Image (tube, rainbow, N blue to C red):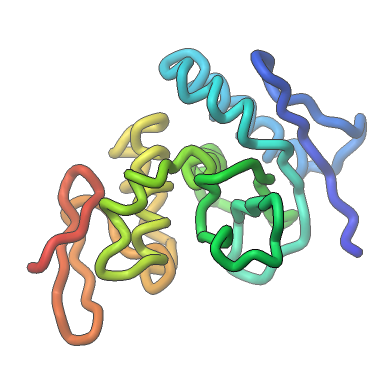
Amino acid sequence: MPRRAMLRVRTGVLPMLTKPHFNGRHKVWKSAFDQAWELIVKNWSDDAARLSRIVLCIHVVKMKPGEMGEWKPRYPNPSDASQVSMDNRDGVGEVWLSTRSTDRDSVMTVLHELGHAATTDDEYDQRRDPDEEWGSEACADMYAAKWGGLDRLRKWDLGRDWVHHGCIPGGKMERDGKGYIMDEQFIYHPA
């Protein structure tokens, strides 16, 4: 089992590290999470209150090359396939962040993963076509842009895997020979 560092989220307060000593990479994520949380709490208190109920903790773990973060939903009954979705619109979960350091904007990585947690059923349903994975990522990006700014999201997006994440507003993608463009509400339309 990989060793992990963990940040705990408590309702109404900034998340706190549960272990006192971390190497530099963990400090980068702690700082990024504190900055991301401050942006959300200061400007979108309703979102912060909802996230405080949804996000159980943040783990710093070894991840596959190229992965910087992941939202890990926890379901009441994981054996029930009807409860499994890419985001967590039915319960609580954890954010996992990579032990590898990055030159990319770590605050936007945290905001994106928290965006998965914040996504509602209606938001996902509006964005899941033409590809469910792109819809999930569009929802996370929508929140990351809301909390951190669209210009900052555009800069952060430059190094991402478009096959997994899809595009951002104004971007074009192709699926099964059909072209799609994303509008400013993070919704795909036929191009």
